[in-house]
Length: 324
Image (cartoon, rainbow, N blue to C red; front, top):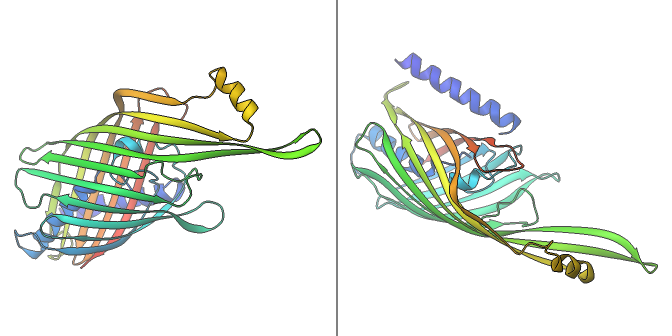
């Protein structure tokens, strides 16, 4: 049995690491990871009571948007950037938690911080029927003009899963909002005078989402020795949602801008009706030995509405952390 489990771990770790080298933090199971980690800690310490603990680690992956909401990440078109995510967190035995993280990537001028995030949360601990969690995440974006910055700055996410059946059904609801900018500049000559024309566009987003899931958690104790534990959670997800985008222009070429606006060429409001947006599959692995934690995740998503971008996307990560 141990040899089979070790082989599974090796293959999954190899697949995620290989993936991250070419397109590379997973997304759909953040609360699940918190619940699983608490379960593994209790399993290794041979206690049924939750304990307070700290968490410090670094993840390598390609997630640019929400750290929890798969509906938002299904909209991610850029998946060819490797993101390094150092994270520190503290989880109290009452269920309250606080997580701080940063995204580091190379945008062409060397490795640097792209954005920060802070997330207070609550996880219902040690309840035998359900896993329940709620969090608020605020993203501090360094440059809203960057194509690699998350357009989401406010993200409220709640999830609940029923644990007493072999297939565990779950539902998650998210509310998110934020804005991002786009700017275009052009040098031109007007009446013999060189001028720089610009058109700056601000997109303000509001997104509501619902995710239905079905999952099963496999847990083993004593994989390599009596000080370790392993949990593997495959899950299927259906992501639905609606959104509204308000578009505002600023320009110094007012004549051209007014001409376009009168002819309806400048959009002001874009609304997406509530609909099924994507189908996805997630596999989350949590391996813990003493205080060391290894968390590979792989999420695959197929986007359903009409789009000019690719419909199939893969988001993966490996996180290595220390608990204390």
